[in-house]
Image 1: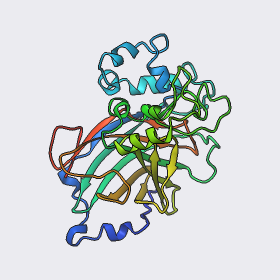
Image 2: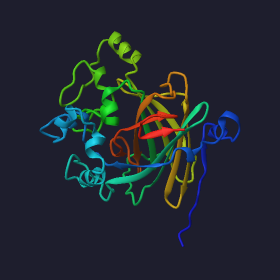
Image 3: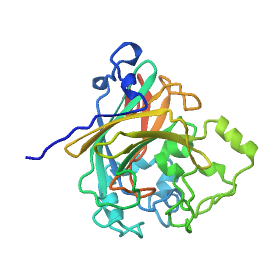
Image 4: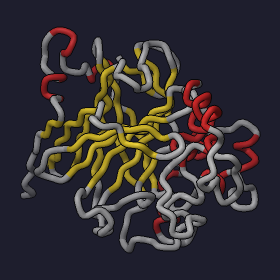
Length: 311
């Protein structure tokens, strides 16, 4: 009989946030049922690749108004298997790596905090030997609506062909970034030449940036939370604004990430406003682009038409 062990992990005071009293009562998960989200291995499929008709047959549909999820809902497993095999957009496949993961995702909020819970089994993951510190990382990317490319394509709006490990990187350690911060974009990405400071300030003032929440995990150890922003580069926020809680039972992770609705310097989380979210999971000590990703999903607090309604 397989032994199941459960490790309850709290980071940065989440236990207090989950105390069942007053405004900080435990999340009412029953009010917002979990929904399935398929995450798949993307290889070197960059934003520029996705917009190039000669490379991506769906490029013209995207330019015509279709979003990624509209066209590819249900295709994730097949696409992930193809790319993980090394037959498409992956020159350095990890032998034996599964092409996809299935997660269940749900949101909840109380008077001052938003919570997101992901439940998933990693399956048989080969050790990629890329991240010696953490076996697993779980990430949510949040868009307040100010990044049009992320509204339509989730994290693909920040995944460029010249970022680290991508086809046009040339050995660069360049992180994720948003295209409008660059002086010019080409099929190979935007390089390091930025727009003038005044233009960058204007972009930020209009809400043109993404936020990421992340839990760093090892079975049997405390979760480590981090968060930050993606603008002209990926920048970690210190001290972190996000808390993380996780458990692992019989190989299945349950991870809860949370943040105050009105954390300083962060995207305001308010009822009725629509957000775009995307999810990523690094498994088997993988790092950087060697992750599983989801297509974009919509989120609203309290009520409205969206993939997820946090109550």
